[in-house]
Image (cartoon, rainbow, N blue to C red; front, side, top):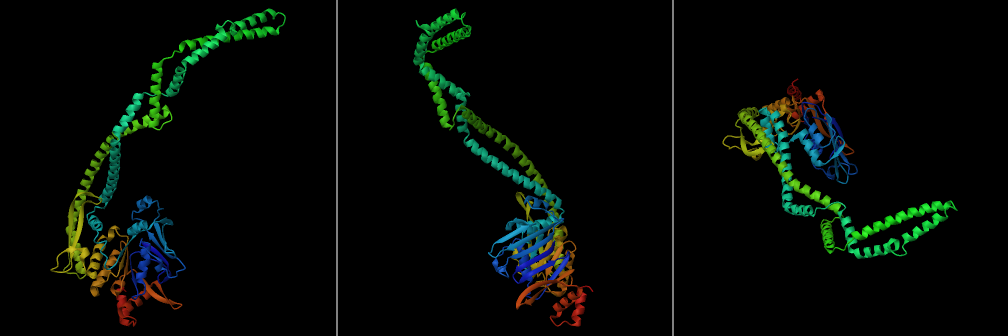
Length: 551
């Protein structure tokens, strides 16, 4: 419910701060005093648009702030989904800046206007005399039926499953899209994988092949060089090995005369061993190298294949090619994996769809069962409100597939007069008839917290006398289970209010200002008496005012 409203620098309001009560409250005041201004300011925190034209003082921003008690209205999920801090008290604030820009806040968190409008729809319903949007909305009409058919718990569970159904359906559609793309490229990826598989690449292969090809390509140069080196080292007449052997013998002969020569002798013998080993290794290398054109061709072809694959796949080495091969294999596996996943999810979709159909059928049966009773209650209430010939028919139309609200859509048909056929509510011309119908239906759903706060803007349109009193009784009864605020010109309705607010204009520095005051018991009697007899309040008017207030 709306517990507090603060308005600053809006239209004719300089600053206004007011607490609102539970139950049924009335707002009265002379025509032009500013009742519509109050609704205009409130509409800003309910998501309506505003501009600089609403600024009373163009040098200051406009601020409208509403405090709402929201405990028990199941808004925790809404707040969590939109990453808002939840508290049993919610504060909605709207600012219109001097440059025309607008800012919106929910519990001090900046939000966009669409989100503020969405939460506003959960908090306040403003009913103006020609409003048919809510009543003619199929979702609202279904909510009325579900309220009377005890479908609330079923519909909540149904909504949860349907939301999951929609989400799962989107996931399947995305998987199907991915599968289609994957299948489209599957043959190409299979060709690439086969090509890499047949290449039978191994890590380090490219470097080894390049080294082997380098050796074979220069085989004669290597053999010639080795033979020349061996001739000097060990095969020639004056080879190094034989000469080193002679030096070693000389050193051994004279070492008895100088002890240091023994060490030199050992070193020379060690070098002899190394040189013989080097010569043996060089001989083996020379013997192993043969110029083989066939092997050169094979190695060259292998390197050409590797280089071609590297260029094709934009890779620097075989390691990169093997990684690409794994990636391609993953894409090939993905097609099969997607098929399996889609099959499993489609099965789950069918199971959920079957559940939804079963639950939707329960909802439909309950809705159809309650229609005659609801039609009769609406008709009887309208009769009390002076519409003796009013008729209403509720049509439940079965759909082919499940929707967020089941398998039905609904249509309310109405006629206020004899001889006039039933038609959709949106085609009703009379504001008074529409107001009474709206009041009737909203009074029937008020006990289920479907609408936490209702503000009726001149619900008394087209009614007077005894009927006005009955309208007041209905509003008072609605106030037992929800917050009802009625802007009225009729004393019969004003007298039923549990709280009474008076809108009036004052003059400040020769400038009109709209103000709001909560009246005490004595002030209420005076105000209602004025509504009965204008400015000249008579004793009879005062007495009647007290009677209307139940005093």
